[in-house]
Length: 143
Image (cartoon, rainbow, N blue to C red; front, side, top):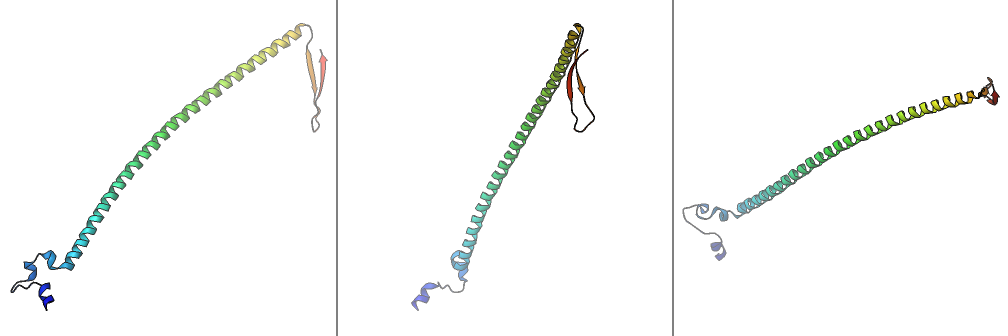
């Protein structure tokens, strides 16, 4: 009986929950509320950290996208510059080939007329019969 007298205070005419602190009046409910409140705080902190991580990741992704776009723009400009250089080189090569062809033709004409000054010209006669495969016979003839 001594145990039963010590475990619960007895107040006549009043509800025990009105006299004792509500937290200690119902320990199971107090434990449940404390556990739920703790879980809520932990989840709030995890959510806050997750939100910060998402924000940081989004900022990094935006920065990477900007860097990639800038790199792409620079590469496009560089490619256009190389295409322009190749076109200029191609034009120079065409002009050089035309110039060399003109010079070769002029030189051939000058040599032809110089050889004709001696009173005769040398031609090569090419005979191509209509056989298959074609045979080419070359002879030197003076006219």
